[in-house]
Length: 287
Image (tube, rainbow, N blue to C red; front, side):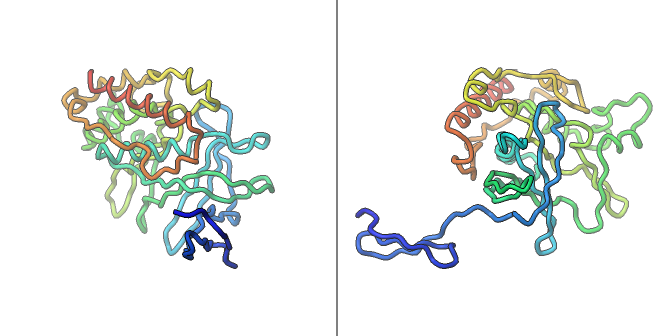
């Protein structure tokens, strides 16, 4: 193919025209999604690490969408990888056949503290149907559990044994630190209730790492402490509630980075994350 001989951008900035080998091609520009109209609210990182997560929402064609960014502060701007972690965890859950909220990683133009940024964030559609209400699992458990009945026994009694196994297995595989009582939800409608899809896995994998040395020194066998409402504060300890026959049947997820733009993180991120996941998957299979 001949070298590019000319370049022209159309008036609407959505396409560019290039001339290659004497032929004219019109190609689409992949520009960031313009979200400068959104107002962002700060949600503190519940793991206790430094940083804030900016969240927003909007309704498009009758569907509510939620947006969530990675760690941010007013001095460094956006510096975390939580949004990418969220989508990797979604890919792993999908590959394993777990019911998980579907997150999309997008690059967007936003305004925070009166300053424009181009950053990566997640977008997800609300899992609530029309007329549906929600309640944290912690509040639901407080209302419905029997005397001396712990959360694990309670989940099994109401018919969510497999959900429990899926959740505890996924949380170990991705080293999720933040399965507190509000990161599980009960959905109500017409007198019926169901557990919501698994969601909110940003504080997972190597979420505490920022620089290359942090990733390379990270303990990939880390199991705690974690902020769990169900089970203990140790991820390996929680695997004892999962039948070994269930773990033996797990199939290895082949492409945990599916649909993710590799420009969203530095090169060293991808190799370290893949190594961590492979090690933890092998550990589970050999229990």
